[in-house]
Length: 281
Image 1 (cartoon, rainbow, N blue to C red):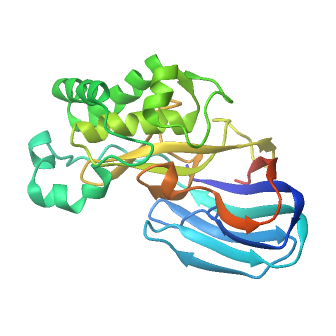
Image 2: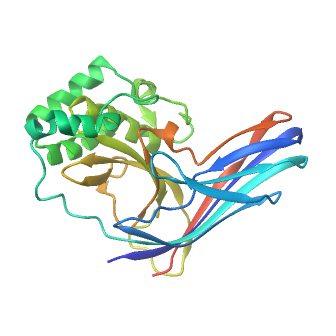
């Protein structure tokens, strides 16, 4: 059964001295695709600023704005209504490992097979990915990678940051959804399975009743190529379905940050990030 979700995502910053100019990008508008439809979406800023939108290289809708009036705080709020679909079945005509090694397919998906900033090469992790691949079909392999990651990472907020790599999280043995996704991607790519990072939102209650607003989560999961992209959430051991709202896809977090910008002024501190999610139907 499809869900309809209302999402409000607010990010705030406070500055030690007035900021006189800032240039910003927000990636907080959910995508519309074959399994998700964005019905409403608006981004507002305080102080108010004119915004414009464009699609970046990875197909993410970016809201860009700049502010040239002095300000000590900046708050960016995105509000959207999205209709999502249940998790799809694993593609029936999934490729074999030999098919995934075809030169044309490798060339087509090379960006999702190579290391990236937060998903670097690592000999021991690559070896683990190849061992798992040797024992499983590509679809079974994605699930096995999720099991492997959860056995080695403890979910613990505050122990890693947005700039923590997969290797660093693995060495610490703890992290959050971003780290689970990054570590899974290293193993998947090392085995030759095209894999991409997905950022968005997760409704935390599987049996949510319509009308109740809950504290939601910014979330990250992965998609592997099985003849079509198939999403899996390694943190929660579930396929990506009606509770998952896609905002952006890329090689790793560096391609999809919710906020990115530069400014002229005093040092900044975060006012925090809040996400609220309401199941409307």
